[in-house]
Each structure stands twice: as structure tokens, then as C-alpha cells.
Image 1 (cartoon, rainbow, N blue to C red):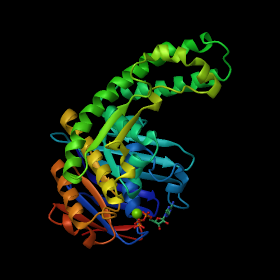
Image 2 (cartoon, rainbow, N blue to C red):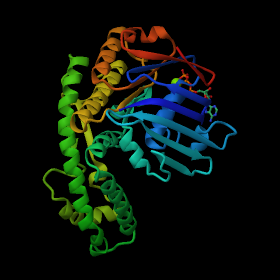
Image 3 (tube, helix red, strand yellow):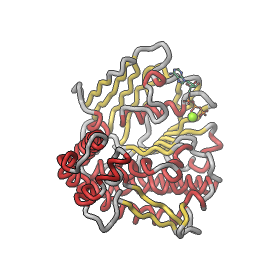
Image 4 (cartoon, rainbow, N blue to C red):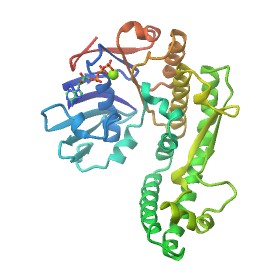
Length: 359
Ligand SMILES: Nc1ncnc2c1ncn2[C@@H]1O[C@H](COP(=O)(O)OP(=O)(O)OP(=O)(O)O)[C@@H](O)[C@H]1O
Ligand SMILES: [Mg+2]
């Protein structure tokens, strides 16, 4: 799967761009503020219906315009190209179009265009709170188990309702109503996540070994409640504590992936460049695992490729990306920063004041 053509309208400073892409590497070269990250953000928007930089759509729509529009023509092996598009208006209305059909769901669009984003802020995966690692795990589970999305949405809704009730309840039976279903969902989600983490960490360990040979990195999954307890029983046992705090303390909504070197969290051991390599290793492992299990290829969006990495590490990363066979989008300030990649088949795009010319 790759994007053959990309049309972007009124997205940040990009007024109107129409790009014919390489199914290998696509380089976005331009000065600060030219619009490189905006191109990556637009591609990400196509796959997620939201920006990775702002929760406010009005910040993303080009100044003084009513709506943004991103359209992609997707190449699929042995099939005719699939057109997909998203429009987001200033009033918040989103329209998703897939193969000419309007009113399609964002989750469906995400299934069609899986993508991995690597930005200079991407350290959050290692240094931020558990929610970043939960979404790392859930990215993979989403693509492997079509039922995950509904189960996860239902879990989120039930947990909210239970938490609201906890604030009023005086006896366990007043919240018990939610707990049977909550327990089933948590156990199912936990089983999917556990299997996924086991498989993807085996792959990630191999890549980490190539990227960071001096470190023995250990990844362990925490399901959100202790190993010994049966979740349904735990909810009953924790009732008083949950009531005092006003929310459900344990559960799949608290899952995490603990990443350590020896007994120390990685962020206390690795340098910034090493952290970036570790994030790349984890994301590459996810893409490779997805392809192995489903045959789907994910796109890689890499913003400010050169930041934090020396020339040897850039070469290593370029080589690993090329080996995935995936379509890759890379932004850099100038061509010298991507010198290590010039041997990789690709297409240059020069970005200047929101206008893009193919090289
Ligand atoms: N809603 C908007 N409408 C128009 N322009 C915007 C909007 N939001 C941001 N911009 C402008 O878009 C430009 C492009 O920003 P972008 O972050 O894509 O640049 P960049 O090429 O990635 O730069 P850098 O190399 O510094 O990361 C900036 O000048 C920014 O001020
Ligand atoms: Mg940028």
C-alpha cells in the first residue's frame, strides 16, 4: 500500500498542492516555516482525522479559509487505485469519502492507511506518561483485531459511567451493574494487548540490538492491574478506595509498557539521539509486524529526520527503513541532511512558502 497521489488544500500554509509520489522515499526539503511538517501533518490527518500538532481544527485550516481538504489516491497491489479523502470545516464537521462513497467512518480510513509518525517530540513514547505507550500498543491491536475499536470505545464509555456513579454510590451493588461487562472487556483487551506486546517486542529487541548494541533493553507489559487478581473480584474489593478517589483505579485504561535498561527506565540512561533511535526501532518493529501479520504496509512519516542523529546513525536508520519496503516521507532543511539516504530510490520535493515543486 502506498500513496500514489496527494492533494492538499488550505491546510496550514499549503493553499493547493498536488503531488505525484514515489512508492519509496519522498523527501521534503525546505527552510524553516516553508511547510514541510504541514505536509506530514496533512498525510497524518488523512489517516486519523486529526492533527498531531493541535487539537483545534481552526488552527490547522489555512487562515481565512472555511475548510481544509486532503485527498489521496492509494495504490493497492493487484487492485485499482482507491481514492480517499477528508474535509474538515471550521464548524467542526468532518466528511470522509472512500471510493466515492460519502459519510464513511474515520476508523475505516485509518484501517486503509496505517501510518507511523516519528517527530522530534516523539520521545514522549519513552519519557511521557503511560497513555503514549498504551496508544503505541493499541495502534497494533487496532490493525490486528477489527473488534478492538468497538471494545475499546465501549470500555471508555463504561469506565466514564462507572466513575460518575462512584461519586454518588454508598454500596458496591450501585456500581456492580457495570462491572460484569467491564471485566469481560478488560480481559479481552488485555489478552489482545499481551499477545501483541509479546510479538512486537521480540522484533523491537532485534532492531534495538542493531541500533543500540551496547544496551540490553527490556520491555515488559503491565496490564493495568496486578498479575494475581481476577479483575471482576478486584473491582469489588477496590470499591471503597475507588469511591474515595472518585474513579476506577485499576483496569485496562491503566495499562503500560515498561521499558528499562537493567532496572533503570531508559530515559535515565540513553542520550537524546539514542532515545530517538529507540523510538525508531519500536515504530519500525510495529510496521514490520503489521506487514507480517496482515500483508498491509504502513507509511512512515519522519519529521526533521536529521535532528539528534549523527551521520552513521542516519545511514543505519535509512537502511532499516528501506528494508521495510514501505513508503517513507522525510523532512529536512537541506539536502546535506539526507546525504546518507541519497542511495535510496526516491523523489525530491522542494517546499517554499507553502508551494511544492518536484525535483
Ligand atoms: N492555519 C494556518 N494558516 C496559514 N499558515 C499557517 C497556519 N498555521 C501555521 N501556519 C504557518 O505555516 C508555516 C509552515 O509551518 P511548518 O511547521 O509546516 O514549517 P516547516 O517547514 O516544518 O518548518 P521547520 O523547518 O521550522 O520545522 C509556518 O510559517 C506557520 O506560521
Ligand atoms: Mg517542521
